[in-house]
Every structure is written in C-alpha cells, then in structure tokens.
Length: 610
Image (cartoon, rainbow, N blue to C red; front, side):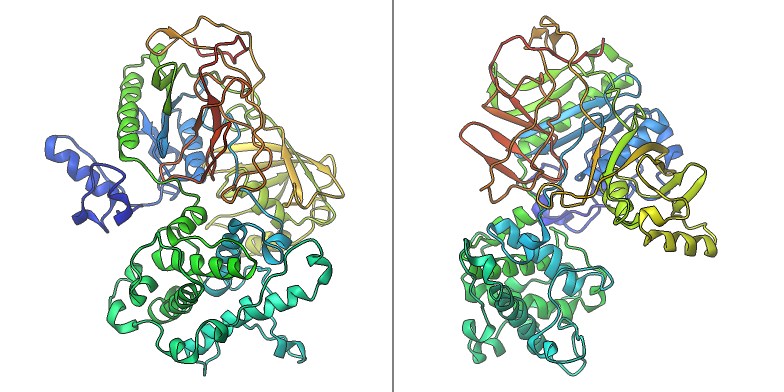
C-alpha cells in the first residue's frame, strides 16, 4: 500500500517527480503497459496482510516475487506461499549489498529456515535514566515520548508523568494531559520543562547512579529560549497553510533547509516546540492513534529534536536530522544501481521457476567489493532446515516465569513479535486459551479478554513447566508447538523480555563437497554453519541482539576466514549499519549477516539441492 515519496526518486529509475503521492503499484503498472499495452496487470493498493490476500489468493499465481521492506511482511508472504505451494523469489537491497533467493516448498529452504536477527532491545532503566549513546536517546524519544504524546493513551509507558506540583498533592495528575484552558505554546513549554528539566532533576536525586557516570544537566525552556523568542517561534500560517497533513514540517515553518546540518540546542528546542504545535494545530485528529513512521517528516523532526535535547543533557554528541532519521528508521540509504541489478536477477530467477528449471535455481548475492573477482556471488539453494518451525513443524521451547508472566506477555512478545503471527489461536490440549477474529461471539471475546491479563499458571487450563502449547494462525495456515519450561529469574540486560525462545536453530553442517559448481560453473569454497557475531559495545547505531546467528549467504564460509565483505538479508527499505577495521555488518529489523572473503580453505557445508 506504499505511495511514492520524494525520497524514493533517487533509489530507482521508474518513478518521477510527477508521481509523488501516487500508488507505487499503479504507477509501475502504467509504466509496463506503455511498452506492453496488450498484457493484463492488476495493481493492488492495499496491505499484503489484509484478509483478502489469503491462501486462495496466492494459489492463483505460478510464482510470487517479493520486494517488501520489513521482516513481518516477508514472513507473512513466505507462510502463505508455503500454504499455497507457490514458489517464492525473495529479494532485497541494503546500500551496495543485495540478494535474490528462491524458495520452493519441500525442495529448498523457506525464507524462515534460518532465524533472522530482531531489533536490539535495551533495558528500560538505561533508556529512561542512564543513556550513554545517541541511539538510547532516539529510543527514548521515539518509543516513550512520541508514543506518550501522540500514541495510544491506554498503552503502558515508563515516562514519569507526575510533576513537582503533583508530588505534593493527593491527586495523581498526568502532566502530559493537555488542559482545556491551556494554549499550545504553554503546553509545549510545560512538556519540555517536565521531560528535560524536572525528570532530570528526579534522576539526579539518585546519587548512587552517578558515582561512576557523568551527571546529566537539567534543561529548561527559559534557559534556552528567552520569552520573546518562544512567542516568535515558527511561522505557522505562512509555511504550513496546507490541507495535506503529510506535508506539514517544523523545518519549513522555521526556515531550516538542510537536514544534514547539526542543529544547535536552541534550534532543536525550536523544532521540538514547533513540531508539537503543528501536531496539535494541523494533525489533531490523528493524536491518540499515531505510531512513529520514518516517512512522516514531522514525526522524524520531533523525535530528532527530542533525542538531541536529551543527548545535550547527558553530554552525548548531537546528530543531524539525516543521521537521526537513519537511526530511528534503522536505515542504510539505497543505491539505484543495486536496486536495478537485483530487479534484473529477480526476473532471471522467475523465468527459471516458470520453466521448471530446478537445477538452475540460484541464490545470488550482490557484493560491495569483489570476492574472487566477482561482484555477483551465485550459490545453489539449500535443502529445507529440518529444525525450522515454519516449514518442518519442529517444536519450540520457551523458558518463562509461569507464575509472573501473563498470557498477554506470551502473545505480544513471543507469538506476535518472535513468531510473526497476526491472528493467533492458542490451545492447551483441547482447551482454547486465546483467539482473535471478527466472527467471535461476545461471551467468547469477554472470556479471552479475561484470560489475556491472567498469569499463565492461573489460566483455566494452567500453563506450567512441561506444558505443551499449540499456536496457530489460521490466516497463514501455520501451526507450531511450544514446550513451556518454568524459569524463575532472567538477566535484565541480556534477556529484557523476561523469557527465552529456543529450538529454532540453524541446520547442522553436512558432508563437504568442494567441487560443486556454482553459477557459471566455477567452483567456490564450501560452506559451514554460520556462527554468532559479537557487536561492539560502543557502536552508536547498533540495533541488533547481543548474540546473532548469521544467515546463509554466498558460500557460507566461516567468519574466521572471512573479513572483507558483508552480505545481508537486506530490506528493500534499508537498515542500519556499522563497520570495524576487521569486518562490515549490516544490521536491522530484518537483516542477516554473512562474511565473505577470498579464502579457499576446506570447510564443511550444508547439503545443497541436487
């Protein structure tokens, strides 16, 4: 359901300035019909996860070509293709890197045969009280402050909502509530003073926390902007007189033009106040339902400014809007030529699938630097991973405190976040514990809602150590079993979710075969089971788990041999990066990481498709 943004124009060779705001699918259709007017193409401007795009919908196709921009949607399409028994050609790009993979049910790995890294999570105490990196400030601004001001008011939030006035009162007033008789400038200054001033003073009161850390500095609006400048902030009518909410911009209102400039504390303060004013003045109907979107200019401006002000308070280097957006959206900026190369490779693999030329299927990786004099690395597909819970139905294991964790925690953190199910059904034996759907009776909805907030061990059919739960998604036609193991304590740093899912592992190494021809017939070094990469602790853009299992790419050589080039499971939207002297990594919400180099040592590889 994507529409064309201005930022899309430099990523590819199809869209033009005149197409901005239009449906990508419809513009692509019109472009093809200009040189092939007699073919039939039906564009859909909709969400691929909508109910109408079910298994029967996918069954009408001979092959599906994927170029989605997030892990959740990729998983969804993979599962529907498996259920419909339709071949899937997956693809993605990240900067100069890209790849195209072929997935055929029962013959090759499915898209989920190898675990994908999930976004890095941080302990709440680090985000709310002791940030040390700019990414901590971004997470605070995006997931806490933005969500509190503009998101669902019923969602839990770890921001301190009580002011100094409320502390001496018996009433518990939420300082974030906008009073009826309060103009928006006053409200903005009050929020500013609360989150950047009062809350910092509250944090400073805990002297123990600052014995080994630099103390933050409270920042109040009056210290940054004199009263006359606050009243003059922005030109609301001059720059923002538009009926299109997406075009509203605090930068435009303030006359700031270059997103790559690092704003001063005063400029960040002006942007913060102006963005908040514009949200309430121009987009008030959206408040209460908003979710941060990296393509929402005003949201990015607000989050960038808030993160920078917090960074200034904690003595952390401030960043430009361009840099902050990259971190907030986990972005590596796209390269048009890479996208064009990958698009061509998609078509090549699709033709092979349509011709049933199974022996010629290739997973092809586009490299940033030549490896063995090649920038394109073709590899034969691998057989399905027998431990994959999606295509091999292997049971999973979950360590969880069954006496503290609620069914809500299990659904949100495991079933939806980890397993990617959209409409889950959870059973304990024959007992149905939870279900979602529009066709449920009212008493059933009430019953499941009651279960949702119960501790696992107190459910009508208690979930304790040794329990086997069956989780299904009827829309995806996917089912898996999860063995529950009770565990008392979890490491808040390494296991912030308070639970640990396992059993979804990479396939064991198979017998080696060093003479298998690949791509153009040239033999390449064999592959091995991938190993975890350890991220550096001082990286500002590190948004991946501490332990990541890498995903097959190239010829899956051992990382000990490989150092010069990284291949990712890229997203077509792009993701965050970092580099070291020894290696490059691409990490993000749906990235995979594999290292390639010119090494030729013999190492074992997984069994390839013959």
